[in-house]
Length: 279
Ligand code: AMP
Image 1 (tube, rainbow, N blue to C red):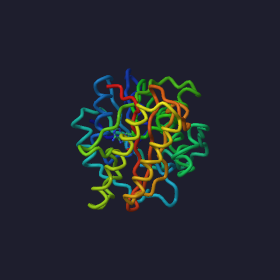
Image 2: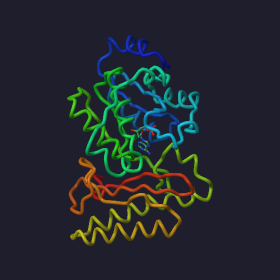
Image 3: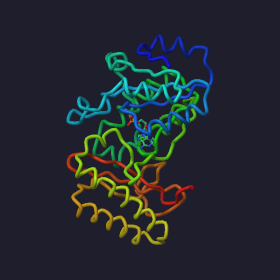
Image 4: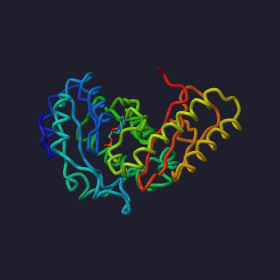
């Protein structure tokens, strides 16, 4: 595996490569990241993983400075998966002279977009920048960040980008907590409570799968919101959404998911569950 920082060097390495699979990340790898990398490894001749803590997607009061960084450990994990190129751009090389921002309207606006207004513009801008550097045939994203998937899908569709997107199910700890680099911020007590979010989303999803009326659906969502609040969570939202439009819905179909974001002890947890799991 080569670790590459320069845009020119990466582009010259990739010039003759066909069938490039790409996994954009912010590092601090866990099994969720590794599952995307393994899928990319299985399906492509050449695999590029980017590791870039994207300053454009953090608001000034967020955790950019303390976001976990450990290049050596990450490089070891990526090497073990058999990644060809670990691309570790400097922030300057991607953003210093950038005067352009991409705003994906509609799907960016609710949920995370309400709580973090600049976030998806920062994501879309840097993902576009990375796509144009790597020019992958295939790119891999986690459904853990459901709204991010909708933003990238819309970006690729709107600009007709020649990349095939793959969205993979969330990798979880044994107790159900969705893996996330930010779980490292949880205190021991909050780590014990954290799986309650995934449990509430699963309970709501199961109840909704058996529900017929919008008022029943509303009832189950409200019940789980109240349950989490009673356990000490500050719930930002817990809702049933159409993952294509990222609009709230009270009508079920095969694709709908229950999304939730809640804070416990200052750490914000984000998760979602399918109402009708495919397997
Ligand atoms: P991040 O480093 O947090 O930006 O994540 C990089 C990629 O890994 C994104 O596409 C995430 O959606 C995905 N990802 C993060 N956590 C998980 C998880 N627990 N399971 C599967 N994919 C994940």
